[in-house]
Amino acid sequence: MQNGRAVAYSTPSLIGASVLIAAIAMLFTTRYPTGLYDLVVGINRWSYRLVVYLALMTDLYPPLRLDQGGDDLEGPAAPAATSETSQ
Image (tube, rainbow, N blue to C red; front, side, top):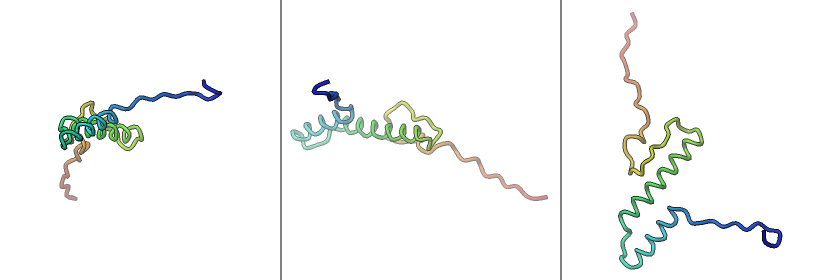
């Protein structure tokens, strides 16, 4: 405590540090590094999937990978429609 107030320190997040590194790289190369872009997008998508899961909007736990989308975003397959005829 300093002068009756708590002192809090925080470190930059992984996504914040990645964006900062990418911004510095863009100063010299004028291009966003592809690997850093994939990392930032993957972390961002996974964090949103986690928030949706924790907010009870879905029962699907987010996979522990930084993918660029795919089949796991569609959710469970819908049951096949059956044609039932009344007798």
